[in-house]
Length: 307
Length: 290
Image (cartoon, rainbow over all chains, first blue to last red; front, top):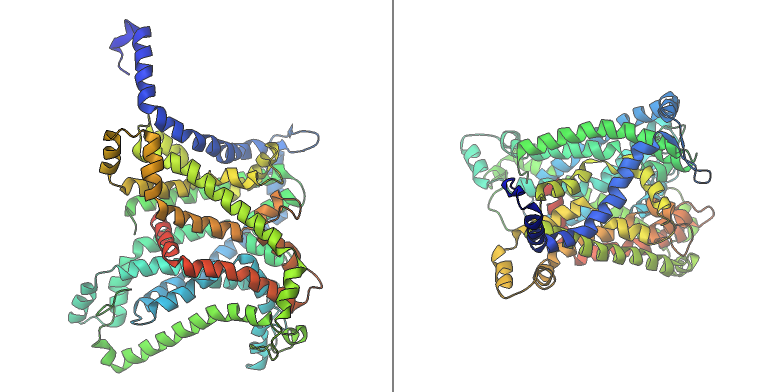
């Protein structure tokens, strides 16, 4: 609003308000429901998370202020540090086992001249199946007398592996299961990027005498570099919050070997009814992940429109 | 996919021995990969047809020796699948309606109408994308409890409208519709409301189908959150019920369990095969957002 209109303000303001409302009425009205819902179901919980972390939550007697006690409990809990270690280990395993598979398969599938569609659908199929079905399925796969151990003992004559109950194996087993289940969607994203690389670049490289490996190394990989970085950050953010398969398959066991940080939050809240400490753990996680998200945003901004 | 005359490899490359061997190995690996994707699905199906003794035999066999279709009948009667299915469809339908109405209106407004401080408003919505959901899962639960939404479908329907990612997809879609169409409607005397209902909505059927797929898969998949919100059988969606009564059941014969799992698995696969086009595009949109 301009300032020189201050002389006959009341009349002008009334007129301007009318203009404002005539111009913006529908726009604001259309935004109103979304405003209310975003505040009620996203912003209020987010803000309440910070508030609750300073309170002892009691649904019956009411909440009471406890200062930093929740944080003290959280930081002095040995399980919390185990959970941090497990989460980092889980993120690491997801990188080592899960990150490169979609890239390799995307490049391989892009080279298929026939049946590309069928292979793509096959690779994406596990994403379609409800996860609860997969939990049931993989529990049977990993069973000491399941099909995988059938192959290990029958074909190779080795001792059966206790995939679920051996603390060295349990997290790895979960990561293998998740990688199998999820690689299809990342693969399709990479595949679209690989297929959009102009074919004549390869032609030119071949005429210049570049071998197959050099073409992949110097043309294909640099072309999808932006996407690689983006999906890497997204995977890190995603896996740092993972808890559902750990909860469903093993409930954090055996001996806390698959207790991730997010699972600890859930357990504090719903097993011990200690919502205050759970909220405090959430705030601590928010601070760490917030930094990661900022890095991602900067990266995305630098790459521009990543396709 | 269109036929290409060359990829990374040219037809000339394939005449060289080492490349040809490498290519064959690659094709072999892809075949193995495809089989390892199909194997679990078929195993589930065939295990549902075996006798319980045969499922538990070691080492397991792939094909059943006798075909017991009555397992499916027993599985159907083991838990009240239609009721849980109805609950899942309730959640799916309500979520879809809320998404279309709330986010459709908001994104149309942000994209096409006069909004004061548009940048700030947009930021208000998009900021929520940067806050990881797990960090506020507990306050979210307590918040729903405070609002008195426990054990009600509204606890799923209303928060479905608070999805910044869908808002982003919708807004991008509306941005790409030609402005002339709305201008023409304006000249013909259509109000903002009418141009939304009669022009924007019909034009955005493809994006809403993509969103419908996303919503379908999340309401079909989500088992943990409903198990916290809902308290009795008449409200559990299918995934939660399967997890509680089938996956964690003691003393449920394995073959019956696999029969139930097969029945739960087939509808999403059918939906996928029918709506493949929209799903692939949805993935692409997801990829652009990153």
